[in-house]
Amino acid sequence: MATPIIELKGITKQYDDGFVALTNINLTIEQGKFYSLLGPSGSGKTTILRIIAGFTNATQGQVLFNGKLINELPPNQRKVNTVFQNYALFPHLDVFDNVAFGLTLQKRPKKEIKRRVLDALKLVQLPGYANREISELSGGQQQRVAIARAIVNEPAVLLLDEPLSALDMKLRQDMQYELRELQQRLGITFIFVTHDQEEALAMSDEIFVMDNGKVLQSGTPVDIYDEPINHFVANFIGESNILPGKMLADYQVEFVGKSFECADGGMRANEAVEVVLRPEDLDITTADQGKLVVKVDTQLFRGDHFEIIGIDADGNEWLIHSTNPVRDGKEIGLTFEPEDIHVMRFGEKEADFDARLEQYEED
Ligand SMILES: Nc1ncnc2c1ncn2[C@@H]1O[C@H](COP(=O)(O)OP(=O)(O)OP(=O)(O)O)[C@@H](O)[C@H]1O
Image 1: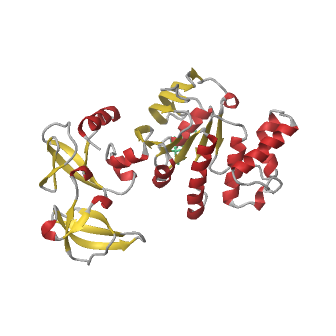
Image 2: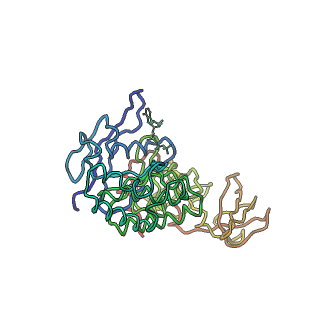
Image 3: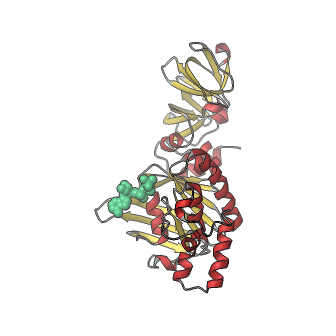
């Protein structure tokens, strides 16, 4: 593997008031990929960006850039630029001067500044906007100016701190495509902070799921969605049915009082576990043909599917996605395949989890 562009090794951050915002963070960021730091508010995402940008120092640990230690390097000497949530544009300067700001400070030749600013505006699809005032732009256009201002410096890594959170839903979705496309066109590394799981799943090559100052799991969107490491990740990413269970033997798990074939193994016999079934993996059949029987409690039409809540004999709620509606109060059977069952151990470390999946699960 080529040298990663950024590595965080054993990073801990304790703020001056004693609060520990990050604990033993280890991240590897490769050149040219789109990464997301995903987690709830306060989980430490922005703190990681600030440490990479050099706006704050780690209390412990190493920050490496192309294999070189940069803990002490000031922000303006790092090949990293940040796009902030509130854009941080200068309202008294027009679009051109906002984008040119950093280059003007560096006293670059006028001709070069002009060329680079106009190129950057073209890249974010705002050609012809150079002389507009910031107040004359929509939220989405201001967002693009902020991105142009960051990429005009030709950073190796672009840090984006919830850059879409101020936009309405439709524009947000458009900008997701645009950002992903821009990242691919520029070929530079993006590290994108968000608490929106759909955004992270849609855009990223790799996601780091964070909670409470720790990275709980890292992987591709598909891996994290299909194989969450624990209850928090299963619940935070996508919708899921999570039930207590017991591992009877390799490939055999018990939940709701019944034994089911599954695709997981490598646990102790009779170990208490949690079982995840995604709502879209549950198929509806007649009550006598189901692996499980639930009584339909409520359902909501979601446009492309119905979201059905069913209750089983033990009182567990089941979330089911179906393309067809079902009558309220009706008893229905649920079927699923062994590989639709995902079994999680309590407190398993990511490396052990990955090794176990590799050994026991087949595609
Ligand atoms: N300067 C500071 N001094 C003390 N605590 C801080 C400071 N900055 C951040 N924190 C705390 O560190 C924790 C992590 O903050 P951070 O901003 O990194 O989280 P986040 O995941 O980016 O959250 P959000 O999505 O709300 O921006 C929070 O509990 C926050 O209150």
